[in-house]
Length: 209
Image (cartoon, rainbow, N blue to C red; front, side):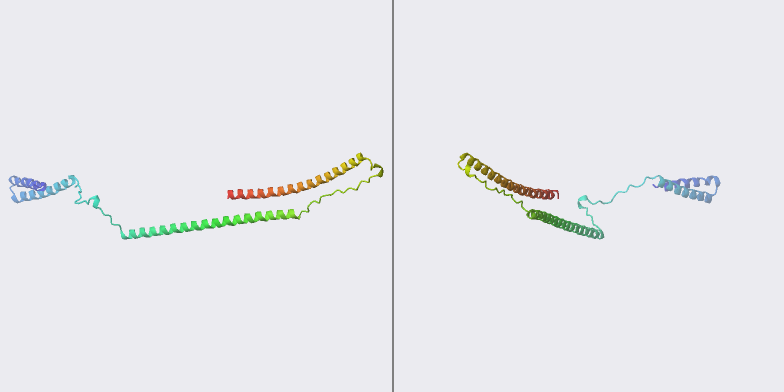
């Protein structure tokens, strides 16, 4: 039975028992009714405050296998626009990188052509300088014929000595001519060494770049 109803009956009985002492039925019944009603209200308040909180139990729960997430159409549209924007930004970056790479290759080709042109110009100027230099004239030594005295014609020894001297002088002239040729060859070798140095310098520059 309800606690409020039991408390009401208890106080009603107390009010009814008061009739034997007072002799007034109406007063005893009214006091019992009012007292029972107040006790019922107080008891209900106490029971409500002291009762434990109800436990929320879900009525139904869908299995995880059949759980379907429905995305908001606005959010889906925003995500699609974001993906399109990201794709456009990526394509723009790739095109910019391609243009930068082409520009870098053109700059390298231009620098290489300029370097080759300068090397050719320097080589041509060097060759022109060598051509402008006057070749050294070989000094030919001419000898006056040695007069042979009539008195020494019959002397074979003196004639042999004179021929020996002439031969030595001719050999000396030949040596001087050979020295001049060697000097020219040295100049040509120096020119070739300069060309080799220019080629090596160009290779070093290409490796550094």
